Amino acid sequence: MDQQIIKLTGLTKHYGTFKAVNELNLNINKGEIFGLLGPNGAGKTTTILMIMGLTEPTEGTAHVCGYNSTNDPISVKKHVGYMPDSVGFYDNMTALENLMYIGELNGIPTDELEERALEVMDIVGLSEDAIHKKTAAYSRGMKQRLGLAEVLIKKPQVIILDEPTLGIDPSGVKEFLSLIRRLSRERGLTVLLSSHHLYQVQQVCDRVGIFVKGQLLVEGNLDNLSKKLFSEKTHEVCISLKDEVEIPWREESALLQLGYIQNVLVDGKKIEITSVEDVTPEIVRFFVEKGYPVTGVQKKEYGLEDIYQKYFENNIREEIYP
Ligand SMILES: Nc1ncnc2c1ncn2[C@@H]1O[C@H](COP(=O)(O)OP(=O)(O)OP(=O)(O)O)[C@@H](O)[C@H]1O
Image 1: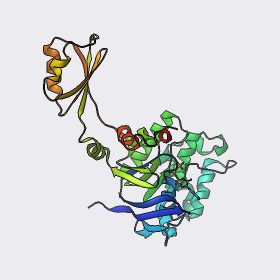
Image 2: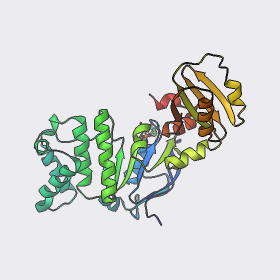
Image 3: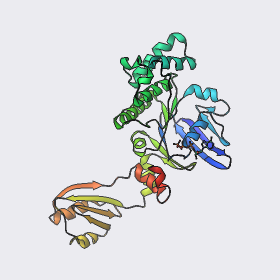
Image 4: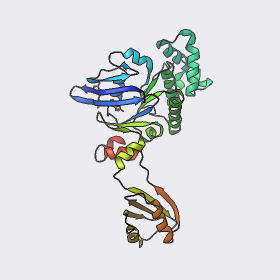
């Protein structure tokens, strides 16, 4: 059985009458990368603060590595590395000095400090040159890596990253996410990552939870979520042709008569077909037999963006893409 390393039961946080987090039940397994996905103000940071024992829940419990976050926050902090959405350093100190200082605060013995600091710097990919630079000269991407090094120096079992890719350029984001994935896979690290960037979460997480207005609407891996949400939905295939077809398209009614086809949308050289079953081979055969040169066949795969949209349709779309 999977080992549950984070266990949230009925976790709730009220600020006055406002419910920032409402009866959250969630288990995260050892070694898993879980994405907490939601728009600004959804309650992601509040949830993380309760998991870390940095704020008390109004109701419910959070357990991490078997410790109750409210009753025993010190033990939780020993096992969990937390990187907030903005990481700060002492700008007049070098990266190595910053890291050794954090290591000292985390109780690492003095004679091990430098070796441990150099080891984690190497893991996060900060060069020999960067190690001795003052952090005032660090770019946002380098600061994220150093932030991650600070989190790793105490050898945590769980790392919690709040919006870790904010303000990093696309190639930096890609590198950072693959570093997280490698760390999790190679070292069995459990990762809880909060973000409102769908594509990034989709790239790196094993499982995601969609969190809106303090409530977890749905959770699962992308395959399951998409099956759950779109099982009733039809299959979509887009056929690309060498030449444009004229509208009205003379073969449309013949295609519809195949029986399982629900809808045909003609757009220049592209024809989008929805059907109740996956009948891609029959559709391709139809075009070939009618003498149309087919240059491409694309089946619509539902991604996180579709799943997310499904939940936000007519709801709070403007908050997702601020
Ligand atoms: N100390 C507080 N007092 C009152 N309301 C708060 C407090 N902290 C957070 N909130 C409110 O709780 C809600 C959830 O905030 P939270 O920071 O957890 O959201 P989030 O999902 O992390 O969003 P963001 O990505 O913008 O940080 C917001 O409406 C916020 O205004």
